[in-house]
Length: 266
Image 1: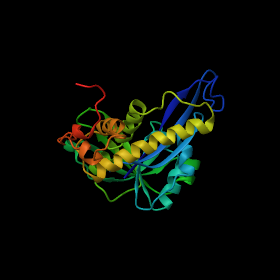
Image 2: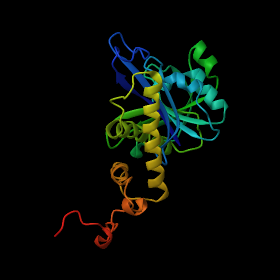
Image 3: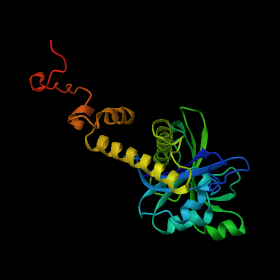
């Protein structure tokens, strides 16, 4: 299960003129495909701020059988059908102006929030040409937020509630963007060239991935931020880092004073 999204990092246009975004500001975009099970990025692409999010689907590595969870900014009939033809599954939200006709309606579970579960075919000459097969449309009312969401997917086997749950896991990629912006150096850059900025971003991503791997492999209860803080102050200490990351680890024993020289006479 993979979540796809992008975040914008604002830059000063006078210093970063190679990354135009608007008339008065510069920016770069961090397009990320996040493994939602482990919260570790599977694919990252850095572009200027003008590249539309949906264009990343043109060079995204697609794995057959995988689920790609995206917001409605990635709804493009041609690109979604190409994703479908590779044997992968997608879950996204329908745009409000989606024009389609119902082909079949499956039984629903209204008390659980499933208002409708339909097979649809897109209307219009070009949409029908770009996605010639049926899509599945699920209208779901979230009991927690009382919001009604409309999902589109090419998967016809999973229950409607499972499709809704898959999309709700997409919030993890928002937490990923929030975490790296708050805890890693992505607001101030040491250089102004394109290479310097991308190098610093990749160093930040590598730091996150290493910490996430250690946390996942050792099944640590500490948060990623706690692990980052412990590692940042323990890099030059002669202690077992894995022990230091445990919440109930014993403090390192002090050095024997007998082997130290006295600076002042008693």
